[in-house]
Amino acid sequence: MTFGIHIGIDYSGRETPTSRTPTLQVYAAFGDEEPHRILSPSSTEKTYKNWCRKEIAEWLIEQAGT
Image 1 (cartoon, rainbow, N blue to C red):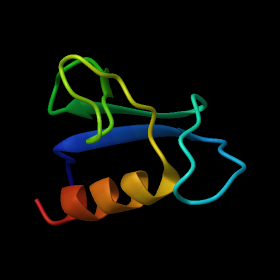
Image 2: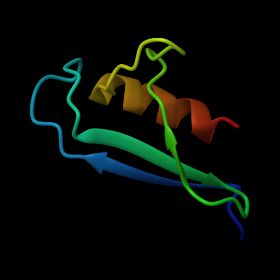
Image 3: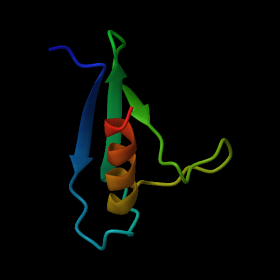
Image 4: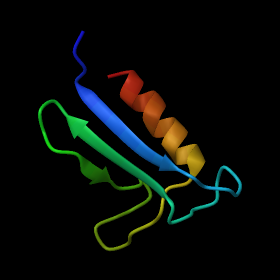
């Protein structure tokens, strides 16, 4: 079995599921690509926002469906 995506998460947030902390980070490698940082869905081109645990859970569910 081969995988199309490999995900690494620093999941060391200690607050509530909706608290944004700089320690929550998501990286992914698609296929044979090098891993790269995945920005929070709340981030925009002009505004960077840290992940919250709720967003990570939702993103993982979305990735599992693809």
